[in-house]
Length: 224
Image (cartoon, rainbow, N blue to C red; front, side, top):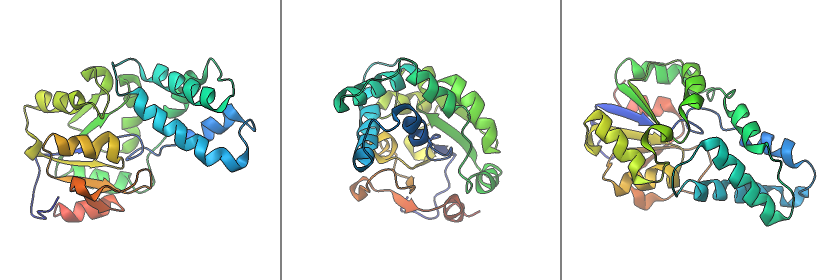
């Protein structure tokens, strides 16, 4: 977002990690226990994150099974056994997560001035639990289950555009994930993008996004 006077029709968001506090690591620790030495734990978690990304780059299927398959892959890589109910346990945990502490107040304020949209890599049932906890009114909530595509697949974004009868220039897209959101959004012509930096992904400035540390900064950019 290089034009600070830009006023979008929609402000679209990734949900999990960006708005909802991503807490996958504690659940992973419960499942793995001490089977991974402490000195290798960070690498195991990084591998699991990368495999989850790879797992959603193909044909759509339910997110609970995505989590199960990704966990089985990372466990196989590290030579440990994966529990058969891991996906269900991850999914159950996700449905209990709440927003980052810095989200509800500025998001509610933003929603009083702009149409808010969620574009999420989860099934409808996850969002039904999570969106009410955000404390803001949303114009639309789109999921991978609805579109049949997970981000970074272009089809996820194209579904949002089609359903809103909109173009990329109608949006300011906000995410804490470069690979899932900001890179494909750039490729599809979304010129106004914000990285809400929560430390998940390395920065990729060639994709022409603005980096902020809080939604308050986004509100200031939007003239609120």
